[in-house]
Amino acid sequence: MTRSREGVTIDEIARVAGVSRSTVSRVLTGHPNVKPATRAKVEKVIQQLNYQPNFIAQGLARGSLNMIGLLIGDIRNPFYAEVARGVEDIANQAGYMVVLCDTDYDFQKEQIYLQGAQKFGFSGLILMSVMDVEELVPVLKNIQCPIVLLNRYVHAYETDVVLVDNFQGGYQAAKHLIELGHTRIGYLGGPQLSTASRERTAGFMQALKDYGIKLNERDVAYGDLKMDTGRQYGQRWLEQSNRPTSIFAANDLMALGILDVLQEAGINIPEEISIVGYDDLPFVGIHPISLTTVRQPHYQMGATAMSLLMDRIRGNDTCLQRITYTPELVIRETTAPPNLK
Image (cartoon, rainbow, N blue to C red):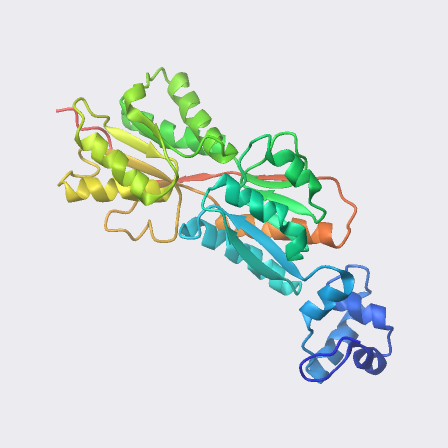
């Protein structure tokens, strides 16, 4: 018998509402197979009796806890916080808790979380940090709970996916710099085992090819999407002769790292160099020099992924979904035509 902290049981709710115990359970779990009038009646009784469900007890009774595992690459990156907020809002509405698992972009750590998914009692998983490597495919296929991939995918593994068109985002960033008149463009990309990073790179490269811009390999580097990596790239730019007049960084944190180093060195932005980021984190628009960037719908991506996952948890019989959002270039203060004097 499931009893709330206030001592009210599901059986008592069923008796007062004049419905079966299973109907009350379906209402509590958000099951769609309940008539609207019945749902409203049960919810009214739940409110009157001040019922607070014990989701852990309910989960133990059916062999899994009402918990969603959310694997992220770096808990310090505000991008993940915005996405997690979208996941949590939908999860909480359905009576599920979200557990953050920070992999720090470490493949071994990622495997440990995935291999332990069943032991942890997760009802479902949303994966934002997984790398596109063959070794992960059997691990993913062994997991019994539903999985949604967010902002990346794994070849040879089919499941629901929520993406941003990262190719288009990379293309937009390069096109903006080219249309301003830049022909010497530097690039700081993300981990190439990430499909999101690879596609941003591919879009950037395609734009250069389409506009006949040659890329100097000396101006290209790949990093871990952290601010320190941006600072290192910025320092490298300072030490160069024949420098690029613009830089596209594959996320906002690396772009801000570049920006900070160059400002500390007295470089005028965007007069001496233009910088474009990717994400549109909440604070980049209020930075002392607001960052031109490519916007992703962080919150909506998380909410959509969680909605897809709930469909799977509830057993809704639908085809696998692949939802792709279109990124948006946001032009601010860090880009301008090159100063060729």
